[in-house]
Length: 287
Ligand code: GUN
Image 1: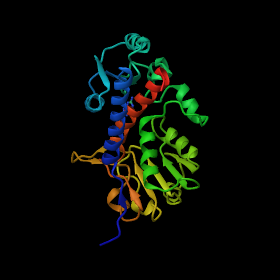
Image 2: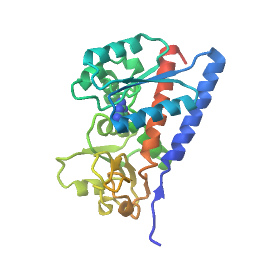
Image 3: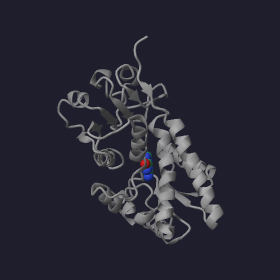
């Protein structure tokens, strides 16, 4: 039998995180009669987004949070969506607002995100929260990067001084996860589609975070033996199965620890959304 990496069980970690949040929600309800509320806005009927939103609604309800999904037709205008956000901003029972992305093309995503009250921005995408993160002062932190960090911290005794390579520079994952790795005292490289000698850059990494959205792009021989590999990619393959950005079958023989797809980072994202809702509740309504 060839040696095999430890498989990082994101499903179990997410279940544990949700259970802890559920206990805290119950304690808040018992002590203060308040229930944190998460509101998700979905515009149009993108099938993947519908599944994500239903899952967010279900898991929030499961841990005893108030949760509501606002499903708006694809023809919703930017002005109508801004009015919906203004109403949620003004509603004191709403602790967290998430606008599911992508939005239909006729809506300017930046304008919508800018309109969300930063104190309720549980996606952590508002420029105020992104700016706080860039300055090393956390406001609300994007959910998937937060999930990556929790998995890394449970896998490695210390992140300090490690070489981390993030492949991908998106606003949703690559940039914020790089900031969090820097806060954890890693030496951080952000690689992207224009990076020269990408394989060589990745080969230097003690920690690889793959967030490019290209199935199986990162090969086993790009991985330094013993490295920890966090695969954020969720790509639908022609056979209907899901695959990550990392060639798992190859990388699992080289890495020290690796997240599977599915069952790695994916489940952590929603758990971290619930955690952010609780964080927003405490910041707005007092701990
Ligand atoms: N669509 C896919 N991932 C995300 C996410 O993290 N936040 C939002 N709002 N939409 C998404």
